[in-house]
Amino acid sequence: VTLIGQPSRAMTAQRLPATPQEVAQLHVLAWGDDGVGQCLGGARSSAASYVPRPSVVRVPPGKADFSQIGAGWEQSFLVSGSGCLWAGGSNRAGCLSSGDLEQVLGVRPLDRDDAEDLKAAAIVAGREHFVAIQQDGSSLLTWGCSNEFGQTGQGDERVGLAACPLRSFAVQPGVKIHAVACGQ
Image 1 (cartoon, one colour):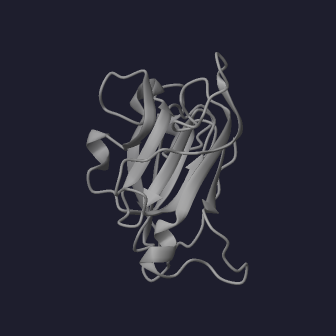
Image 2 (cartoon, rainbow, N blue to C red):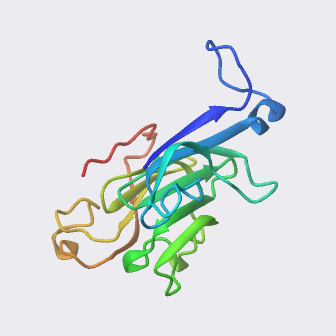
Image 3 (cartoon, helix red, strand yellow):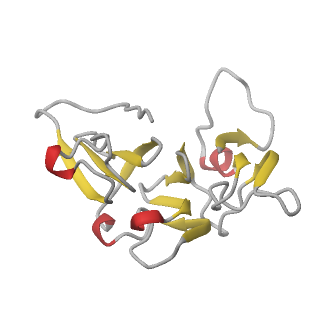
C-alpha cells in the first residue's frame, strides 16, 4: 500500500498548508495491494484485490483533518489533528479493533480497548508492528500483530508470534521524540 497526502488544488511548493481552509483541501491518496482493505476504500480494479492508480480515500464527512499517515504490510493509519488514530486493513490478532472483525474496511477510528487515551502526533508501521508518538513527544506507544523478532521493543518475554498489546515507553525527562521509523 502506498499512502500520500495530496493537495486537491495547487499550492506553492515552498510551504505547507497553514490555515484550516487549506488543510480542508487536502486528500489522502492510496494505491497498491488491497487484499485486506488496507487501501482504506480506494477505487479497486474490478474483481481484483489492488488499487491500480492513486485514488482518494473516502473518509466520513467532517473527519478529513488528518495530519499524518502511515502504512504497513496489511494496515494503514491516519492521524487526525486532535491525535485520534484511524485505521483500516487486516485486524489479525486484534491489532486494529478489540472486536472479532477479520478486516476493518474503509477508514474507522482505532477501536482497541487499550488505546482509549492515545493521542498521537505521528504513526509509523512496520510489517506487523506499529509505533505512535504521543502528542507531547514524551513517549512512544508500540503494539503489533506479532512480535516475532522483538520489533515492538516489549522485551524478551513478549517475543513470539502472539499479538502484543499497546505499551507506552517514556524517554528521559526533558527529551522530546520528533520522529521514529520502523523496518520489517
